[in-house]
Image (cartoon, rainbow, N blue to C red; front, side, top):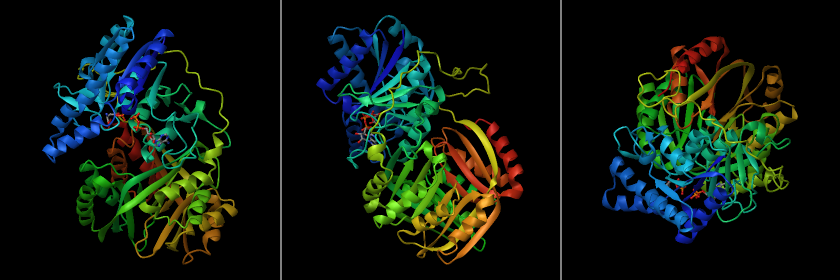
Length: 596
Ligand SMILES: Nc1ncnc2c1ncn2[C@@H]1O[C@H](COP(=O)(O)OP(=O)(O)O)[C@@H](O)[C@H]1O
Ligand SMILES: N[C@@H](CC(=O)OP(=O)(O)O)C(=O)O
């Protein structure tokens, strides 16, 4: 008998009819012979209403009391859902997070799961009941109620599927799957039949609100297939699965996303020497701010510009941290823009297709949209644009990659394998016999590897005019010279001019330099010996300290950082090749230690 986890989001339990409809779905699966565990969120906009209510009373409500309050939304839902299932004639039992021993750390309003006890749920399932669990909540070691951060019910559902060895985790929502982009902004968006964990992780963090990034990290770590589908229809939705099951040949881009509420901070005139980048991000991560797009390009006259983005709401705190950091490292100043948005494309196919960046930049150029910043990773390209242009930029990019067509012919439906105990061995909390080599908490960071690539060269083009169409023309010329570009970094322009850096295979560096020489001020620099260092793993974004730890390890080895780009699953740094091996050693040492 296999076990199915079904999660119903706020929109799917908004009123009593919807609760009854969700209960019927759970019962259908139960009647097919599955054991069924249901995770529910607070009804409709309950959580938002509770947040607003708290703010009416106290504009800085204590985080512990906030969790006490917010967790009530899900408690209402589980009770009603259990009543609905019982009303339809099937035995059910509801549990809060505390009642299933979902133990978290004590970071109120953004707690991480450490451990879950399966006994009580398993006993109820074995007794033939449908088990209903409150999403989004847990309890710390001292029995304080905690919540997992907004959207956290997805994480609860996937975590329960992981520890119980469910055959799949179904996420029921108000759309019938993951779309090529947000269908509210681009009505031509198409449903994606299958997507890999890494692509979904990128899309989720880049703005596709349909799934919570942390839940995908869980699914990847524990191998849980996720099926995102509509609560209001029986149509197959989107399967989020391992790469081998998701690959689509011939398609470079799987989806596009928009993060609307971003703010950009630039630290100007940062001295180009080892340790400086580490000091900057250490100061910012100490303020518990999640830094997103980090861009540093090659220094001019011993000074570089370091830019990064944060959620707009975090801007005031970030600015004070950035100003302190700038002062500490002897930078010239801090500049910011609160009116920016990030548009990204994601696809496994980018690893093998050339010209993806050019297509994206040309689509934006055609709409007259200026690209303020560029950063890339193996499977994504992100650009920063002015917020009022964001929706038009997303539509243009979606169209350029023919995303309204590529998913029209669905592959055969994914069939999950039999239920198996895929869960990693979990160490009981505070167990004196715990194996120090195993993660202590389910959401601990897992570093998969540290790599050194010494085959690349860096090409920088200085004095590029900051106007629409430039990046498109430059990368078209590189494409025509048949050069495969790996990392692209363009920092924000401060005086109407910007610099563009990119990495290419060493043997094609001169060809690339010749191709871009006609552009900009014509000043091109080739750094033929670049060491590209990468740290990859699961939890890189949610554990903000990873980039900082990487920069610290490089600073300790006196390695100067020249280029940075980050993604959900990887942080890449370009450094002087002379120190490559030393840097690799230093990183290996740094990440052998458990981060938290
Ligand atoms: N790429 C995407 N595919 C599907 N939906 C998306 C995407 N990007 C954003 N969305 C939005 O996410 C919404 C569903 O997420 P959410 O409101 O959190 O649901 P729930 O309350 O069920 O958890 C959809 O209504 C859709 O507008
Ligand atoms: N109710 C919580 C948790 C959650 O995950 O909700 P939903 O599944 O509706 O996104 C929130 O609004 O953040």
